[in-house]
Length: 360
Image (cartoon, rainbow, N blue to C red; front, side, top):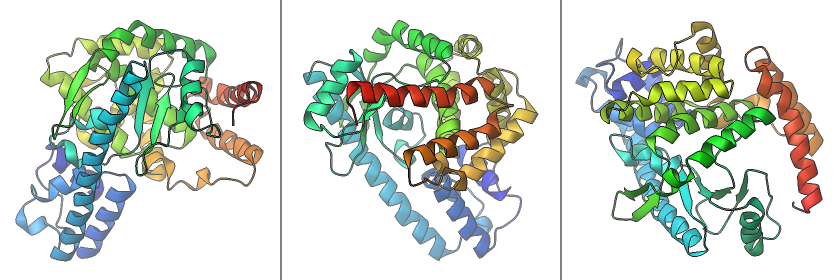
């Protein structure tokens, strides 16, 4: 697939494309890069290609304009991430910014990663965190693991009471215990952002190796996952090698087994090898081709967080959406049965919890 070849050129695992794309093929490559939110990453490949394989000037100009917006967005998100971290710290909450601008630091050019929301984990009791947010926004929708904090005009800030989510109650308890064990390590990991924006805490390499797997896994059942999340994990694994910390991989594998994510992670390793030519010594677990092919089909179908997946179209009622997502997830039953079976029970329990607490 030509698009995957372009990504390999961008990350340096391939030097050229299998053929020189036509103008129409370049338009399709641009479109798919946008769909998977890797426009900036793919743009980096354009300067690495042989001259005869580069896109026509018109497409190059349009691509460059899109990348300039990505750069501007990253500068804004860097500023707002530090601002949010400082605000919550002054309010008495230790915090760490998850994914996002922390992930961008692992890229060769941190400004080329397409940015999204600011996800920030606050250290404190769930009720106190929610009370702080709803004091400013009484009608905001509250969820068990997160609540939106729409205090910045152009930036979506999601406040997390826990970094990630799993539907199976036993796995969720094990996951929460894992993050509890590493709280001080995470909240104490202050990191400087580019552009002299300041410092904020982000998860350590050890925690990120597990946390981002859980994050990707969760989104399979909610909306879908895109290649941007896989590029993030690819660069995280490369950083692991750069720091000489491959010894963390067996520890990650053990946590994967405890959370019953083995089949998913083995499939993901095959995708990482197939798409990015990931080196064998960076595998968390041995690759599984059958699971990987299924996962890759889902990724290419859904696009970034399922925005292009017709199975995610919202119904008019809450119950309509509930049953639509439940039926959609039956596709994954033979692959990830624990999460599929417990997903509707979790969502129902959260609905009752919100009603009991009086939350929107």
